[in-house]
Image (tube, rainbow, N blue to C red):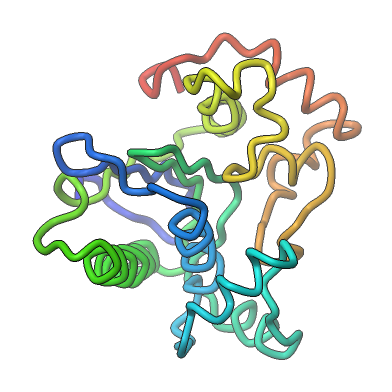
Length: 216
């Protein structure tokens, strides 16, 4: 992890890339698996047979999770996920630390679980990601909003998704400007409450000139 102090209640840009820039998502099932992890590992709750939830999502577009399980996650969560984008060889998350060591526990669970799954599925071994995840403190509200725009514009790097990033299934953009697919597991209010409506946020993202992480 980068040399940054994690403080309770603060927001952080969390990011990581595949080892040697290799793809870490090579099919829909890989993306869906990572989505399950970043949402449901926000608390210490354990899940068995995650593949069953992934298969259900492939058919129905939602994870078949009981409401009481979601409430358990909400009650015990040590982070809040506010925005995300998963790209073929990297990911970006906007996360609030509820505990001082919340992000460390969260990312350890997510990355260890996904690496074990990926290596087993693709019959490989060793590191999947290029070193530890990166973490950058969000210094102020302006930076938070521009970081959210940067994350949601990431899919424009992909030829098939240029000018169509609002429909990209592996980002939270559509959840903020169309319909939230994840309910209370996605804490997007910190962003949306600063705009009069979803359309205003959509225009903010479209007009944002943020192109690099260093701009945020």
